[in-house]
Length: 250
Image 1 (cartoon, rainbow, N blue to C red):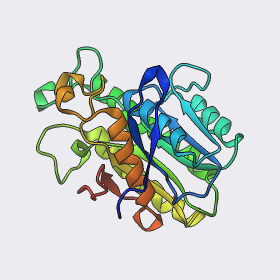
Image 2 (image 1 turned 90 degrees about the vertical axis):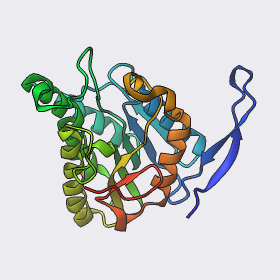
Image 3 (image 1 turned 135 degrees about the vertical axis):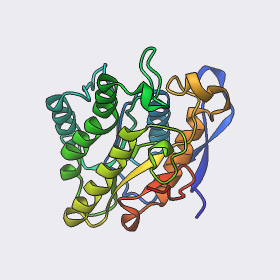
C-alpha cells in the first residue's frame, strides 16, 4: 500500500518548496501524539511531520530539557512524563526516538578487545532499559479500543540474524523487549500496536562519525517512518520493520 500523502507548504523564512505530509488516516481523528527524544534530528522532524498531518489534537515533544523534560535513566522521571501525557487526552501514537550510538570519544565496539563494562552498561541504560521503562508506563495508558501505537526506533545492527558488523547487543535487547511488551499489550488493547522501527541511515549528529554524507535528511526519514506507522496494524504488533515497512530479521 502506498503512503497516503498530501502536499503542504512551508512558508517560514521564505521557503516555498512543497513538502509531502503523511496523513495518518489509519488513526482515529483527535487524541494525542508524542515524541520522546524530540530535540534530536529524527525526533524533531517526526514532531513537525506529526503536527503537519493534522490528525491529532496535540503533538507533544519530550526531551532532556525544556518544558516537557524527562530523564531516560530515572524511572520516576519517566513515570511522571507518561502521567503528564495521559492527563492531556487519549494517547494515540508515541514514538520513542531516544538512543545512543556513540558518546564522547567512545565509538561502537567492533571487537571483543574493545568491550568495556562501563560503556556496555551505559549503552544498555540508554538503548534498552530506558525505552523499556517508557513501555512500562505508557502501554497501560493507551486506549483499549481503536488504533493506538508505541513505536521504538531501533537499528538494523540490533538484528542477530543480519549482524555482520559487530557488537550491538543493546539494540537487540530493545527489540526483544518490544516484542515481549506487544504480547502483553494485545491482551489489554487488541487493536493497539507496539513495534520496533529501523529508520535507515539518517544525516544527524548521531550518525555523523559514520555516514552523515550518505544519509537521508531527517525530514525524509520522518516521512518514511510515518508512512510505515500508518500502514501497520494489530497483526503487525511485536515486529521489527525498516523504513520501507519490510520486516527485519531478528
